[in-house]
Amino acid sequence: MAHRSSRTAVGAIKVINVAKEHALPRGERLRVLDDISFEAGDRSFTSILGPSGCGKSTILNLIAGLDQHSSGQISIDGTRIGFVFQQPRLLNWRTVEQNVILPLEQQKYEKHAMRALAAKYLGLVGLAGYENYYPLQLSGGMQQRVAIARALVIDPDILLMDEPFSGLDEITARKLRQQLIRIWQETGKTILFVTHSISESVFLSQQILIVSVKPARIFKRITVDLAYPREYGDLRLFEIETQLTKDFLGMSTE
Image 1 (cartoon, rainbow, N blue to C red):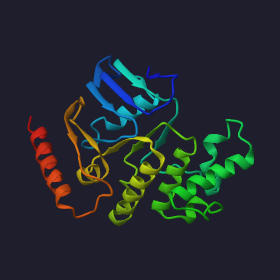
Image 2 (tube, one colour):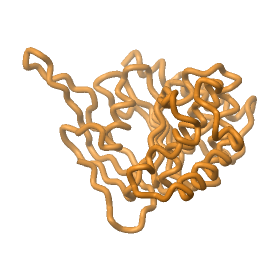
Image 3 (tube, rainbow, N blue to C red):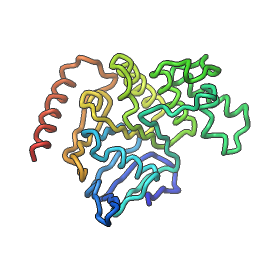
Image 4 (tube, rainbow, N blue to C red):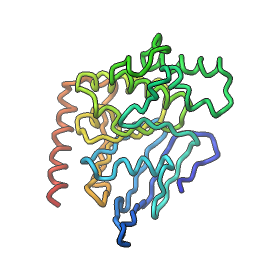
């Protein structure tokens, strides 16, 4: 199991020699992850980059405690984890405000406190005034912003994001990436972001972990040492994307 420290939460993640296997119907073992090791520092933004189906989401699930690893160690400084999935997973019969406060309802918050927190985080994601709308009245990008507000409302130490913008058109995705950087800088969360998009990982991240096909391994670690805010069209970002593309092509032939 992941070890969650009881000391002051700082949002750092350490994954050491982690492997994950699944049992197949005939008794065989399928290894999904093999010897995964990395660190994500306090308040950092790290992307896990790899092809679809390589096991990236499995890494997030292990860190979140939604699944158990077969061997190795996961150490987390912090007790609260927020999770943003590929789909918003909103309840269509609940208003935006009611969706955001859902994680708080089992924690004995008073109603006025929950509404105040919903207003705070809806404002943070740019949806102030939409509290009484229903999900089906919103665009896909707005729904995903509601999902981000719902993940933030518990004031998590760590925010896990599993390809949250992959289902959106590129213009909307670009706007949300810029908003996500602003939210990250304003809240100081540790973010671990899964994507199969090279350009997205370069635009967002301080650290990129390139993951190979199954059994997934950390093929390469990249530091993106460029200041924020970053601008689309920056040639320095393009140069990093070009090198990462070469790395991917090299990985596929090994």
